[in-house]
Image (cartoon, rainbow, N blue to C red; front, top):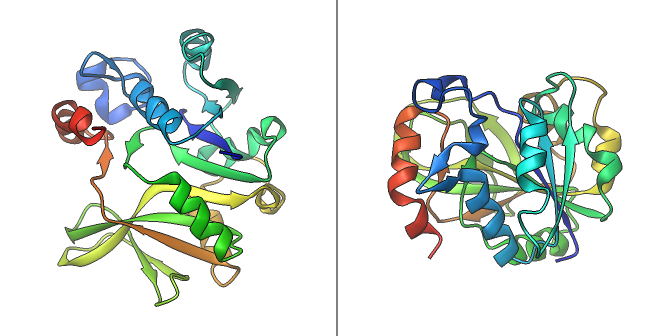
Amino acid sequence: MNADFCVLCGGLGTRLRSVTGDTPKVMAEVQGEPFLDFLIRYLIRQGARRVILCAGYKGESLAGHYRNKFKEIDVQMSIEREPLGTGGAFKNAQSLVKSDTVFGLNGDCFTPVPYAQMLGAYQKKSALITLAGVRVEGNKDFGTIVMNEKDEVLEFKEKFATSEVQYISAGIYCFQRKLFDMMPEGKFSIEYDLFPQLIGKRFFGFKVDAPFIDIGTPERFEWAKKHLKEMLQ
């Protein structure tokens, strides 16, 4: 697949420390392996050939672990010297990106997205950016993506309790390389500081009806330890 994958790996995992200690969140062990190993293997199966790990906390230990871990792909490290937020971490990796189309994703989440289909939808719409939205029935823990019949993103709603079908962000984005030039320098959130500015600028959603794992809390982490492998089959 002719697209580089930038994976956010800088999270401290503060809420997980009761079960993982000072281990970086993406390296939390699930069924005998770091969570990030499962994610990278899935990306390889989906056609990824180049992955850039956007690391912060204990970034050097991640670099050591992945230096020769996967022979099938080129793994690069982008290490931030101070916390830059989700957006700043992507911006920090800009010089390492070689492709005109880029996938960005959260390293502490997993959804079995069909990346080739998502890329095709992005290309068909000549999108600036396409965001994967996971279908959920009932939601109180995540913000909601509002899309029209053309799958254009219209707005983002904050968390609210509902029993209706909603679409939440899978933390997976496909975007044009030129989006880097629209990003500010320094620390910023891609979700809260950049995305709202992109509404109306060929910003589309890609709807996915698939399981979603976020290991951000001990409860979700325990669920992942039980169900991740079956999601990958």
